[in-house]
Image (cartoon, rainbow, N blue to C red; front, side, top):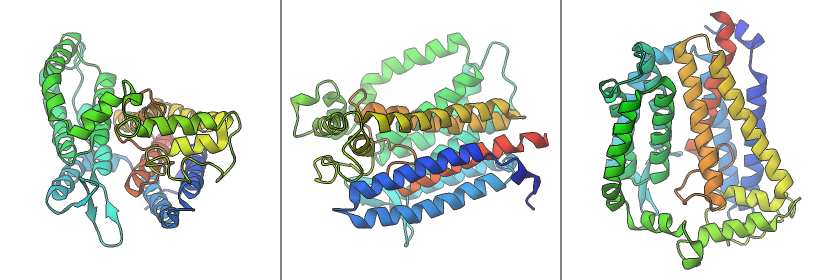
Length: 363
């Protein structure tokens, strides 16, 4: 039964930020696809409705229930990732989706939520030594990371794998790791870098290399970044106006409705509009960290911190990617990029942040 007192403490501020970003995302997807792919923005409307249902569910449940179900949720996410390997739908050479009839689900997005909840459960249930976590303390958390990480790499999906990696280390370092342990781990990873490089697919290596100088292959691996920079720069101060952008509407910019949608937005709304969007993201992230700080229990703190961390890394990597400051690794922009599974995941994350913030008065 839902406690009616929760609605008197509902976090309308976080919800309003989420709604504003989602509205901007819908408008941007419409602008990017209405001329050439009108079915896309219509699907986005359906995903928003599903996302709002996910947000409502995340708000109304007692988040402490997630602590009891944490490992089961992680196990369920792993089962879905394994299923992708056998019955997943292949698109553009990547097998990442499960066809559920009416829609396709990308389990790797749900794995982000499951990883955060599992880590929060583990770090809550074990006291942290005064000197920080030792290597033996990281054994089980490493399993929580490596199993979904390796399954996602197998798909292949380098962008999501990187996000899982960053979520793990951000949460782990927040809990605190012994300096000696951390130095040893860094040394091992540096030694394994050549092996990791050999494991990358050819197109992944090409994307990383083109980051150093996109102009060396302007019609190949450097094409995305160069067209993105052109779109962002051509927007000027106030932009060309809604639906008046050319890079996306004329299909010069690949992935213009997904990973590179910020370039479409910047071309139409210019520097002024871009600053508004970045300000909304900044406020949302700071508000998420504030919700974590105000949480009345350790599990709530770690879940809110993890969800906010996930959103932060998505924003940071996507903006770095479309501006040419980071390699192209396929990371969408929360609430803005087209993509149903990630939109629902981001809305659930926002719902859990709202949940943790408004339930603080009950403890």
